[in-house]
Image (cartoon, rainbow, N blue to C red; front, top):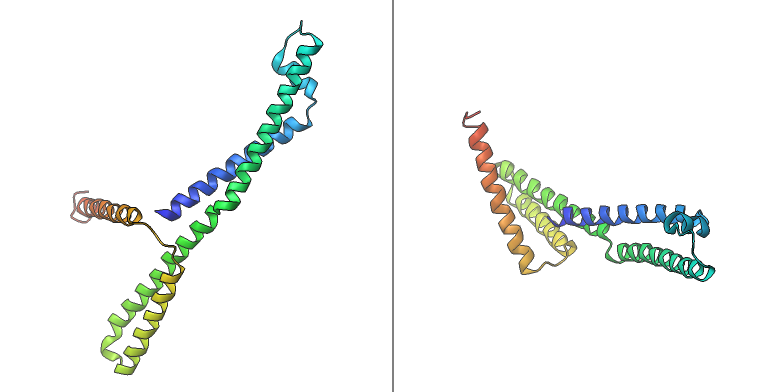
Length: 168
């Protein structure tokens, strides 16, 4: 679902940012000449070749720093963590509405008409608030969710058959 999708993207961006930042920090404190000697290991290089290679090292390092900055900015722009939280919050609010409906179903015989109308209007108000909080989705999202629902129903029936009906 969308919550898991955004959580996974957030985790991936955070891991990439931390690893790249750590690597760049370590490399930033190492002398460029030492890095050059470590990676290039040319013993017969001229001063011009060495200067050219050091410029390439500087360019590569600056490109890597730009990459980390770009990842950080993209993470701030897309705000995957906030989107995952919004979807999780909507699930919790819908669960609360379903709990309220179940409560009405259980206690319907003991409620007066005015109490039933009050509870119904409260549920309607809650539902309206939840639908306002949820971000709009495309038809593709709807069909993916519907397909996922049917797959889960089939899997659930298979598990029920396996464990409840005594096969295991």
